[in-house]
Length: 159
Image 1: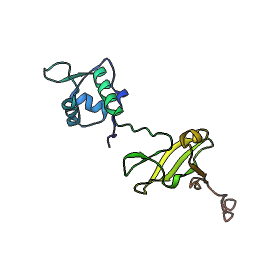
Image 2: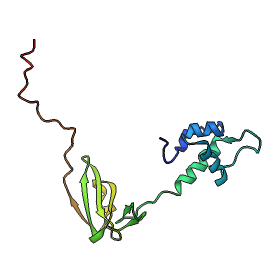
Image 3: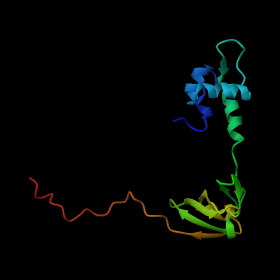
Image 4: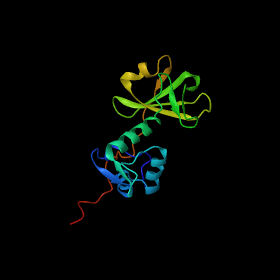
């Protein structure tokens, strides 16, 4: 399955790419490359086969991907349903530690009451969520942890 956003750094700067080569490099369909051309990706010349310079392709993809970023301001989390950065409902946020120094911030959207998530370092919580009540919760138990071996084992009996 193809990635949602092609990685611009897979494109070599000083190479020329035909449409099938560029599609294979970015792991997209050939029609996607032709769609990029209609959106403004410039070929080297108008001759056939169409060739694209790697530096031009990389600059185009970086500019295209930059427009999709939605940085969250302090005190907000990204709501997937509203597709905007929103304040948490009742100004309450839960911090669920995943590692010793980082974890997830979880809250409900104030508009649509959908769950929102944001990764955060524990040291940066005061800077990321100023004036909000941050409640520290315990992480869910891991399924990969194994209890001690069963005592009903007859390993010695084999032999």
